[in-house]
Image (cartoon, rainbow, N blue to C red; front, top):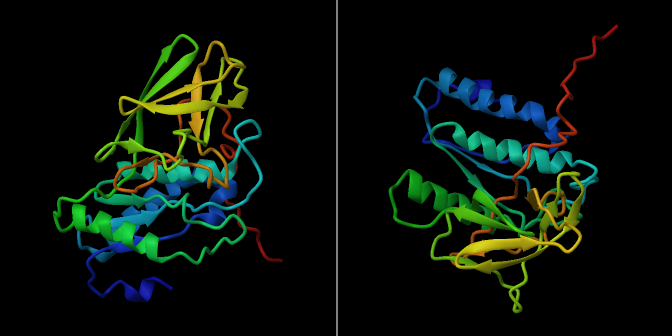
Length: 243
């Protein structure tokens, strides 16, 4: 369906897809960048802008302890930002857990427009939400540092409680964590994990509880600090031969 468009010139691509790949998310780490590379080669217009929407909130099976293909697909999308001239729009706060096609398209469009204005038209606007940068273990807590904080980290929760964070020790068992903002960093801890080793944020299909933003209103990118348990690592796309 795309092939007939190849002769025509355009400015760039806005892409919103990935739901059907969630069962083989690890493979998407290669497949998605290859798609971008292939299109750029076929059009012959250089590394044109390719901006995409990360999977929205949706009630699917899986979590940090069971493994979650939906979360792993989001991770594959985040890793695709290593491809030159790409950008990503996070939508965990505007999806519908019961509708894979959420009705709020306006916010998605505005966030994609912000990416284009900043990266393509050189407008000095904030266009991304907080992105995990580094962690430091301090006793029974983990201190997280973020890039893309804009004018500073905030949460709409009136008590300042952050949701969506989980923490685990060396046993790789995750528990819901207490988390809050301090000096533009996030401090995470849990009484059940006296010796923490890793943190995850929004590692679930329905990540609508996530409530970490920057002051410009862009939501934080879901992430994990570990490299454990990839439930889709060995899943491959297969083609069945017709008899």
